[in-house]
Image 1 (cartoon, one colour):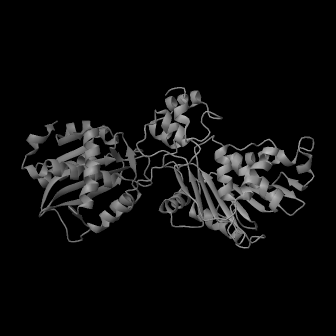
Image 2 (cartoon, rainbow, N blue to C red; image 1 turned 90 degrees about the horizontal axis):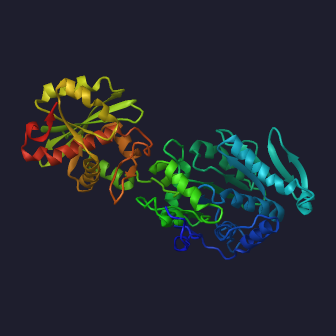
Amino acid sequence: MSAGPAAALSGTQSPRIRLEPDAVDDQDGDDAAKLAGDYGLEPDPWQRDVLRGWLARRGDGKWAASRCGLAVPRQNGKNALLEMRELFGMVFLGEKFLHTAHEVKTARKAFERLLGFFDNERQYPELASLVEDIRRAPQQGIYLRNGASVEFIARSKSSGRGFTVDVIVMDEAQELSDEVLAALRPTVSAAPLGNPQLVFAGTPPAPSMNGEVFTRIRAVAKKAEDRRLRWDEWSCELDADAASDESVALSNPAVGVRLLWETITDERADMDDETFARERLGEWLEMDGGASLVAGWVATEDETSSCESISAFGIEVSLDRAWTSIGVAGSNGDLAHLELVERRPGTGWVAERCRELEHDHGHAMFVLDGGGPAASLIPEFETAGLWLTVADTKAVTTAAAGFVDALAQRAVLHGPQRELELAVAGAKRRPLGDGVWAFGRKASTVDITPLVAVTLAYWAHTVYGGAGLSPDDLTVRF
């Protein structure tokens, strides 16, 4: 990565995805930016722009956006933007805020930053004179004489009880479950000023995070049908070149200002590709097969389908080695039949089960991903004397794409199997460059070993099964 040429910086203030409700007045946004600047919190152009959207009003004086979403990589100024919104809402509008975060330390840090404006009589006497009370424990809060307040909490399943506010700020929105939102949402049902607003701000959820709410809001925003939702997202496309200045610049509105190019270069060296793409490029691994994969799977279900002749068995092991699945593919007339043969904990049982399958089905072909966790089973297959095809990266990506195409073309059939249904519904893609991808073990929200197993089996079926070749022609016998 270079030092960050000026050409790469052009256009960085504009989000890649934006949804704007109709509004007639955005003066409050300009006033909020001026107030923040007067007290040393000078907003960047992108922050001014987002403030205008959050504080834009309809003709009846209500907020044009009752819900606001902001997705931007870390260290770009998200927290400062939340401070600007709270500072203006308290001082000029008399709003009551509930500022929530996933972790206690994040909520405490936000309290201390905002407190710096109201608890510094020497530097900001005008703001200090507005204070009615400041509470530091057990509940942090700032309370003004005009009735405004901001209280800070770490989210939990019951964290909203006892609060009645005008605005809920949900920082770290990438860690926000439906259950927690259900506890918080009623706090604005009787908003004192009658003009409630929810603000969701965060980064793309990692696979281990409970990001169901933030992900769903983003999906709604992309459809551009909700006229009460404001969404601003700085991110890169899937398969973007993570090493390019352009990808970084387009995903980070503060690059070259508070974000140093040299630091970003170090991040790129320290992080794996998937983490860097998510944390610095704002990449959302939304590719749950999404509607197309799930719809294709549903459309190809046939409870009467079965294999007339078996072509291959696919084997897949989860990253944590907690689960292993064996899938099968074969012929059903002119179509292919897919089925999950077995999904069990661990790996110790796999070789013996495959020996049984070979015994029952003659010279069965077995296939696994040579670059995945299942590769550790290769010596056991050698000892067992089983026929094995080890798929390389090209074969794995070809298998994934071919599987999706087969569903779209209704070229396969399968029966109802809950474990496979769950794997299909929760699977996400892992980009591997140049438009190719595989099902992502880290990115997916469920155990996808059943899906990968049948995908590999189907690939072997399409490449070899219909060609009339014997295992001797296809594989090396260990």
